[in-house]
Image 1 (cartoon, helix red, strand yellow):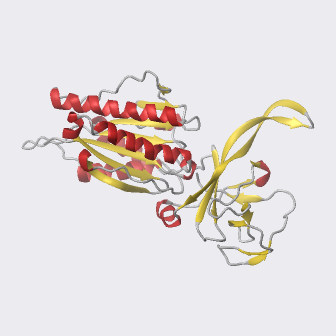
Image 2 (image 1 turned 120 degrees about the vertical axis):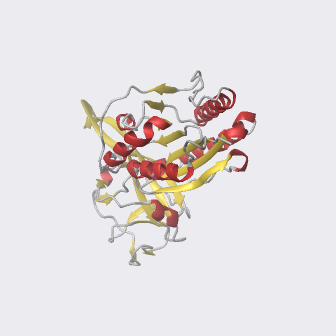
Image 3 (image 1 turned 135 degrees about the vertical axis):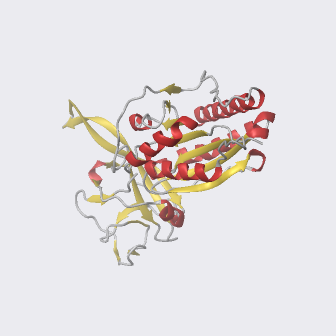
Amino acid sequence: MRRLPIFFLVDVSESMVGEPIAQMEQGMRIIVQELRTDPYALETAYLSVIAFAGKPKTLMPLTELIQFYPPAFPIGGGTSLGKALDYLMDEWDRTVQTTTFSVKGDWKPIIFMFTDGAPTDDTKAALERWNRKYRGHCTLIAIAIGDNVDLRVLSLFTDNVLNLKTTDAESFGRFFRWVSASIKTTSESVSMMNSDEVKLAPMNGINLEKVETGSVNVTDKVDENYAVFLGKCQSTKKSYLLKYAKRLRLLDMGGEYFNQQVAEYRLLGGYPINGAEYESLSDKMSNKTISTENLVGVPTCPCCGNQYGFVICQCGHIFCVGDDVENECPWCGMRGSLGDAGGSINVNRTIG
């Protein structure tokens, strides 16, 4: 039986922590529920989920739809798109059956790639490999989530770059039903007409727009759209992320506003994470810093509820502090009382 391989390549970098990851998990459940009602999809569709941050990881190998169960998504450090595409191509070579003189291979794979930021690695080698051997033998649909994605670099890999601009729960739900509908129509096409042309469903009623392609490469940079910080709970010793989103405001000089914008980062929330999974998916730590004067909002600890979730030890790491007079840094073991550093300080951020 010829299979229709469908790969979901999902960005799980720090900037996806919180609502975006929760929506992705719910979206995968919607896709599976919708597809299991379709006889053509049940007959042909095989699904795989690959997560990527600084490093890629297979969460679900290529699996028959009836046996596929949506995975939980971890969080890692970085957005290594080049490594993710290389990993995907290796998986393709290993799992997709090619057509030979004696065997009819699988149908052309469909790849849905989801990201909300900019690559933090060099994509040049992966791009050359992709365009030389794989691009013409599949359909890659790159989904940019939100307004902070570098759309130009995605267009280097595919002409199908779509921007999902609204990211509330209702919009995500409609979008993932569109993904399901697109897979259904393609499954019917390969079953009934013996054609592996991907047939995307109409985008009516979805805040999803086709992006004009361009050309640019992005290498080794921090995603500047978010400032994310890794902390550790003093009480539970568990890891967490503090996420701030970039916003522009007019320069205020003593109540008088000038036509000049300055960047600040506003708190979105704190999120507990699995520390071991985070380390396994992270490639490198950023050496970039940001001044605390550019951060707006003081978080509590998302693990234990301590009042101060953004306390910086002399070792440079972030941890939480409650009502105790004396505290111990869970990173280095240094003990001391909470004090005011006086003014702003520079603090290390994650790679994004």
